[in-house]
Each structure stands twice: as C-alpha cells, then as structure tokens.
Length: 257
View 1: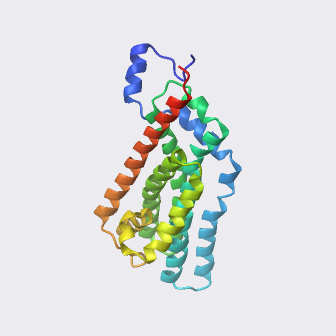
View 2: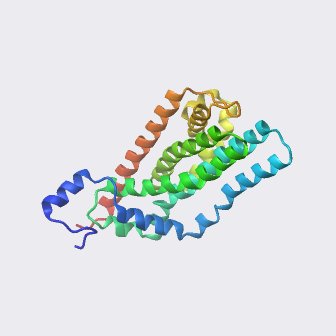
View 3: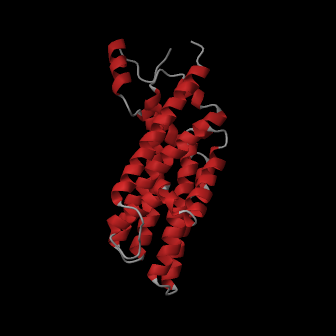
C-alpha cells in the first residue's frame, strides 16, 4: 500500500503517536475548499459588512448605533457563524457526500491527524474571511482597539464554531440544517427569551472577548472573560474529540482489512 510519506516501521510508529498536523491533508483540503463555488458565493457577506459600515458612517449615523447593528447584529451574529458553518462542513461533510473522504481514510494516518489538519484549514480560512472585514469595520468606527478585538474575537469564534460544525458533519446527514437551527434558534431567538442560554452560546463567548480586548463603550457583554474562554476551550476540545471518535467509526465501517 502506498502511503503519503513512506518511512521505516519504527519512524512510522513514532510519527503515528506524535503527529497532529499533516501538510498534505491540509493542502488537499484547502484546494478542495477554495475550488467550491459555494464558498466563493459567500464572499459577498463579509464585503456587505464593510460596505454597510462605510455607508452608515458617510450618512452620519452615530457610530454606537451602526456598530450595534452592523458589527454585532450582522457580523458576529450572522456572518461569522454562517461562514464557519459552510467552511466547517465543507472540510468534512462535503467530502463525505462526494466520496473523496474515503481516499483519505484509506491512508494509514491517525484519525486525529486528519481531523486536526482539516480543522486547522477551516479555522484559518474562517478567521481570515471574517476577521479581516470585521477589523476594517473597527477601523471605520475610529477605534484600533475595537479592530483588534474583532480580529481576536473572530479567531476565538472560528475555533469553537468550526469544531462544532465539523463534528455535526460527522454526526448527522443534515449538518447545515442543524447548524442553521443552532444559529437561528439557540443563538438568536432563545437568548432574547432565556438569559441562562447565554452561557452555552458561542456568540456570547465571542462578544465577551471582543468587549474585553477592545475595552470600548461600543461593545458590552454579559459573561466574564474566564467563563467565555473556558467554555470556548470546552466547546473546541470537546467537539474536536467527538469528531475524531466519530471518524474512527467511519474507518471501521469502510475498511475491508
């Protein structure tokens, strides 16, 4: 059997124990992701956020008003989770649908290496696709601290969202539908009704990080930074481990020995 990186048995065993990132898997994932039309169609969303920020600023709308609507209400509540959903699902769910994941699973690679390599691509792409435009809106608002806070918040949100949505793509046949339900119902509707749901909301973790880093009156939050970071860690690690475990079951079903 041909492997991605041939090596002597002892080295291969050591690599299997220690490796957590595979450049080849990451490169293949990135090429497949950028080659999909669905991803290109989402690029207008970040551009829309910047465009609305520019228009409202030119129109003389108070900065505090348009930041609340454009940045928090659209950027963090819609653009960040939706992009993470499409990208997080794209690195695994789409490959399951078109059968290309079977070729990856046929390689003698640790499943954690596959998951972590794909998640690294998903987090990186999501962070850039959302963090750059959101940081620009912070600069348009006249606050470099807000720009930095939004960039950091985008990274934190990308970690948790991508891990969550990638795991969903391995747990259900309708990951996009389930993901949209989480975004629309849990993170938007229920938060306005039940205050207790905020501690289980990735959006609230992101907002808290932005608030603490930016230290601006333009953003406020209801959670402590310790809770936000702790829950982000739990979400990210927990769903990453769940995805690895689930992928192992895929391997068992698909292997013929």
